[in-house]
Length: 374
Ligand code: BGC
Ligand code: ZN
Image (cartoon, rainbow, N blue to C red):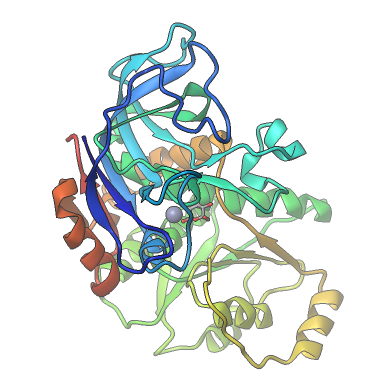
């Protein structure tokens, strides 16, 4: 069967390759964790989403092949339909829709308690990213433990399960950490960035009843500003009003959700956070980028203001479930809006070059995903 893979370490090595069709009793990640007897699930891939991580993997900035091989099958944003289940799988049946978590457990205490999303080991195992093959194939096998059921009414948004889990986790972590304050009712949020993560975070913060401002460079109206507005947020082009001016005009935000992919923004946002506020960092920024900041001022304001920085990556089953709940809730509150994120379908694995081209060159492509078994 077909798979899309790269040769980690070699820039622009994305290619189509023939790999064996998986069987239910395969052990795809035996070098990390094996699937317990009877707990495997065989899935037909429906759609796979791609993001900046896939672009960076193809640029050889990120990612490693599983040991013993040179290639890495990419694709970590999975959506598929169950074909066959092992004898001990009772929670899933053929025909169910699923998305899989990305990280597989290493050996730390967090990995052992089902929190591999916060592993304390330097080496992490992520399907389609690091040391484990991904989902950009026609079929795959995994442990039922790492599969999350997608409700049939969310079929049209199933490919957003993984990005939604990343946003849901980050916000959940911030609220959990803010229990330190005993009482906290945040009123205003700034979301920095209007890519898929920024827009899904915009929706999730609106669902929590906040006044949300979504900031990105390009002046609207355009699809991103329309989606933010349809979620009930205010879209602000930073070309027209800077983040600092916005904070002066509407007040400092109690939550900042940083999702620009720009390291300077991560630090600049520290200058506008409200007292007792939480700044959430989700951008993954490769390379080096030095910036000049007034460290004394930030330190003073952060200490005197009891401010909190929460960094968050990856999601486990619980966060996928939170993400799917938010997608459902979002459909009820803002019908038809979230699907506007799904801008660029690519027809089949054969068109992997078009997929990469959209990801690298097309600044308007909000979400690129590949239709495989649909
Ligand atoms: C993925 C996460 C992953 C992170 C770091 C992101 O693109 O969505 O699941 O943990 O990259 O590799
Ligand atoms: Zn990702």
